Amino acid sequence: MPHKIHPHLQNLKQSATLAINKYCGELETSGKTIFRFGLGQSPFPVPDSIVSSLEGNAYRKDYLPVEGLYALRQAVAEFHQKIDKTDFEPEGIMIGPGSKELVFTLQLAMEGSTLIPSPCWVSYGPQGQIVHREIHYIQTQYENNWRLLPDQLESAIHSIESPHMLILNYPGNPDGGTYTPEELSALAAVCRKNDVLVLSDEIYGRMHHQGDHISIARYYPEGTIVSSGLSKWCGAGGWRLGHFAFPRELYGLKNVVASISSETFSCVSTPIQYAAVQAYTDYKTVDEYLIHSRRLLSIVGSYCANSLAKAGVRVRAPSGAFYLFPDFENFREKLTERGITNSPTLCEQLLQDTGVALLSGSEFGRDATELNARLAYINFDGRKALKISRKIPTDKTMTIDDIIPVCANLIEAIERIIKWLQAY
Image (tube, rainbow, N blue to C red; front, side, top):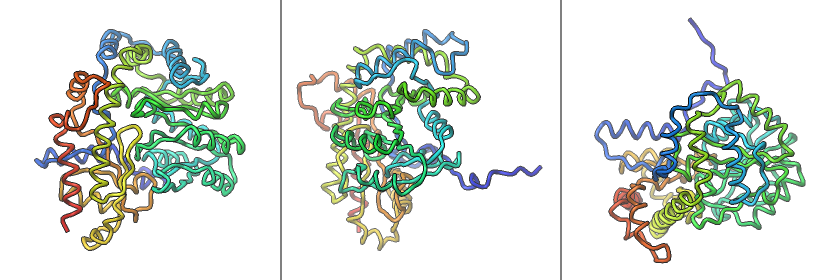
């Protein structure tokens, strides 16, 4: 029986991050040693108190309201008020099966175009393609720390005749960079002047390495939706719980998102929502957990960035999350001699020759001819690393030497990249 597929979906691929993880698993099954720098998954375990809460609520089986358990919505709103100094209320919180689903639903719900600073997360653009949304990438530059500049945003706004939504993600995937308060204020002013809605994807907000994340919602509260969830800062990617925080001015849009959600996923897993209340209210446990996970990510990220930079790779040290976006342009001549002239070929050959898996920059909204890639520095034992960090007072300096036993694979992978670049 013939079945027709929508023409615009004929060439739609699986998400690059999930595809690379699957491929790495297949290579490992075949007996190859693979260093997984492709999928961005937290290396740290979910805190014990939150796991215990999930276990204690496993018996709960009833459907919950589509917007989410009210106690959880209240906890999320209070979290934003306390941590982000923003004025979100429980009625403005929408719980979803991961923030990814909510981003998709929002793009489905709204008219107009989506403006996306590049490099950017792999799924923003494909989601827009699925719902026939107009997508416009704004190409940021290494020289500007991969940050969106106000004049770039202004130019993009005036080059397209339609209502706009800007997706701003920071600390950023794939580059680990963030924005200063002054930069956020300037971008907010451009958005307010031009009536641009901002979806501020702050899924890595609590993973700012110094704990200094600031939301653009402070500067543009009436026009900003904040997106976050448990996957990164709580190490619970597979739990699939995210949220949107809407300001009062956008409750009408929130209601539409909720209506669409009621016809699709109905509600997020009930036991996980109850456990998430613990995650958003147990400040003592989570703060201690974050102090050490941030400390470790800062050490590992700085080690990777410094090592690559010393070898001649153009790379910015990360401010948060667990990503680097190295650029291998300085090696173009040597790489061209080996038949490598674009980022997909670069990553394919690197994986074949060294077993190190990176994702090509072309998956993140960059021109394929650029020689850049994303490196997720998560290939270490987070549980054991936390134990080591907790034994070293936080007022004492901690270095990569202290955690060599738990990140030997990561160090070897970085060394393999460098030797591969310098081999010819």
